[in-house]
Amino acid sequence: MAQQQELERIKSIIWRRKGWVLWPFISLSALAGVISLVLPNVYKSTATVLIENQQIPSSLVPSTVTTYAQERIQSIAQEVTSRSKVLKLVEKYGLLPDKAKKLTTEELVDQIRGRISLKTINAEINKENANVPVLLTIAFSLSYEDENPKTAQAVANEVVSFYLEKNLESREKTARGTTEFLTEQLKLEKAHMDELQTKLAAFQKENLEALPEYTTLNMQKLERLNQRITDVDMQIRSIEGQRSVLKGSQAMLDPYASSSNSKVMTPSERLQQVQLERDTALSKYSAGHPSVVAKDQEIELLKAENKGGLGYDQTMDKLRDAEARLANLKSTYTEKHPEVQSTEREIGRLKAQLDELQKESHAGVKTPAPAPATNPSYITLQAELEKLSVSISSLQAEKNQMEKETQDLLNKLHAMPQVAKQSSEMETEYQTTKNNINTIQQKLLAAKVSQGMEEEKKGESFQVVEPAFLPEKPAKPNRMAIMLLGTFLSLGLSIGAAAAREFTDKKIHDPETLLKISRFPIISTIPEIITEEEVAEMRKRKRIIGVVGIFCVIGCVLAFHFFVMDLDIFNARMSRFVERKIP
Image (cartoon, rainbow, N blue to C red):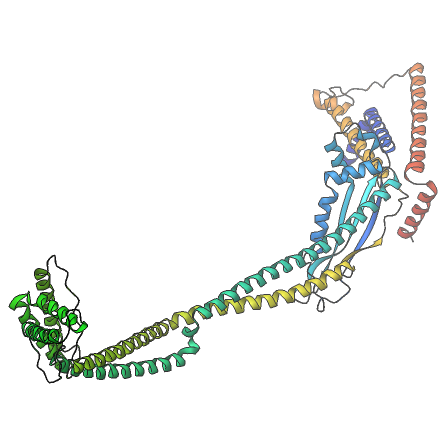
């Protein structure tokens, strides 16, 4: 009973507010229909591109292009939607002619970008080096929307061609860049290897005998040199002994005596003897005779020596005694013996004293050169001593040279570990560089084969499996959806308007409301009195509303027939739909 009363109440409200329900519904529905009719048709042309794998197995010819197709697609998409490319499309195909003059360049570019759409088709692929399937792009579709179907088709084909061209260009550029890079790296490595080879050859040449492989040879050479030095030392000591004996014998002879048995005389005794010899020669020859002149020179020399006095003679005697003693010592001991060294120091001191005595006695006087010895035995011994001195000098020079060679060999032996280390490091670096060159050569060969594969279009490529078609029906706007949406919105808005008007109305329209407000019993109700003029006016209004409604329905049907779908096609579709739903 209560529900029945509520329904009656709702019906009365709807009937009472029928104007608030009908007019917003009709007007908004009509507006939605007008909008759906006014919006221009937008056609969409789509092309499908398949991503084909390289024709040659990757196990035979690995590709140098390691980027995924998805990456290249996105990269090309950025180029397609770039400002310069979009403006070229606008200029070439005259896109948006009505809006081109009204919109700014940025707004025009943004609208064209919005009309280009890209959709990728992915699939899970089982790769050899992956344990789980990998989601890869196997195809993609490109679309363009325009008010002109031919323009939409042309622009879509243009964009697809750009994708194909850029993909080939990108792959060839990558393959060519890889080949050029490896070629340049190979040149650098070869130059580095040549430099290392030159350094290694120069280092080995400079340290030839210090290399580890010469260790045995150097040790043998060192042993021979040491043996030769020992032999030379023995020869020098033997000759030194002979020289010491000869010096001792020579010290016992007078250089100017006529017989080898004459004893050594002092300078004063030699002066007296020479004067007697001069007198004897002068009795036989004249004063200019060479024998007399020689005796005169010898007398002058002896006189000069005798001017030093007794100190000079004693010093000279001590010097001769010391030299004789030194000769005897050297025949027995080596040069490093303490007595030999002490005697050599004494001889040096005596020679220094003789030099001082001569300077004091011959101050301001030029000392004549000593006369040559005349004693045959003395001269013979002097010659032998000179021969021995020459032999000693030769042996000493040979010994010094061998000692220098020995020191050089020792230095080379000591430097061998460092030389071996440096040589090993240089050879290791050289071998590493050589291995790098071999690796780069292999990679370069593979890169050249891959480049040839890309240039011959044997690598991964984009193939158009479905070119952009000429659209026969517009993709936008969806007029049926617009009208249905407009109908639902207008219905909701009309109901809302009627409800709002009902709640804001303060009038009392039924006895129940009056009873509820006044709480007084209702005695009777007076019905609404309608005159004939009001009835005529109501009829006229209904006829007008009916005619307008009929024209609206006819207009909607015609608009649906011409702009959305042919009525015959709609009837056929509805028949099939009913048949499927109601068997």
